[in-house]
Length: 390
Ligand code: SF4
Image (tube, rainbow, N blue to C red; front, side):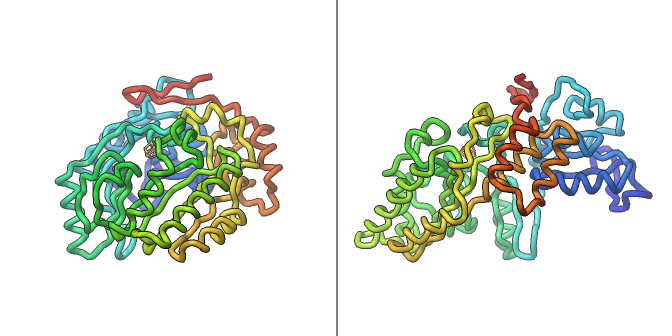
């Protein structure tokens, strides 16, 4: 590290502090286990650390934001005193947004797969999108991205570029096999890639306009027709849990009509159309969090429903896949743990994750009785300053 620290795998004999990277709320299980294993100071970082009120319950210091400045600090006192570090006492916090792009490595995650940061944040600021509200929009340089693409290509490694390329396509290299687009931008030009990923998010045009992106039915139809022209597969992301399920029935009916049209016309659907469904989790930092108390299990799709949708769409195309979302219970547990502000709440939701007989009704009731819905909304202001709205 920049300040000359050495990373050691031997916790009990060599370390002054134990660093724990938490990317997702499920990493809280590992953090709790680590807390039981050691009395050494635990410092939590990673994407989940923005939920510092929860992460501190099983650690000593939570480092909020990017890690490049952290690596320059000399000792534990300097870290704890930083405005980016939460130690359990209230103070004005700043989420560190500094990224030293020259130091971003190509991260190999398996023999033939690697990922590389091409950008973070997104200027679109959809109401539900945690990342766009916690990270300022920054991009790696096109030259560095090209170098990473060439290197992985020569090593025959599949490279995933992690970024939200929704405005244009700065990569412009067919060797990157997966590309993310805003749907309307995808429609503007031919694209050479194996898989295009676009977020549709909501069932109705007016909800999409209000909370995310202004995508019309015609745009979706045009994208499905364009798949064949570009010879690409298309993955569309959706979020159930906000609109009534009847709105989704209409959405699926519309897709069926689009696919049936493709059966006979100039652009048949011969490449895979993959529909992914996620269930809405009301997350702190996003404007949608203020509607959390309206959460309604009746609006949440499950495996049985997406199977019915799949069976319907299969009548019009054999090139269709429909992914099922996590059940409402799982969403509730995620929310419960993420919003916990004391050990009692966190222990309840950690146990709930493992309870097979935890019903939808129990999960819904517990969201309110455990008090986690009272966790105040937190906002990140320009410059990364954190403010709680009580
Ligand atoms: S376009 Fe995608 S990444 Fe950008 S704010 Fe919306 S959901 Fe988030």
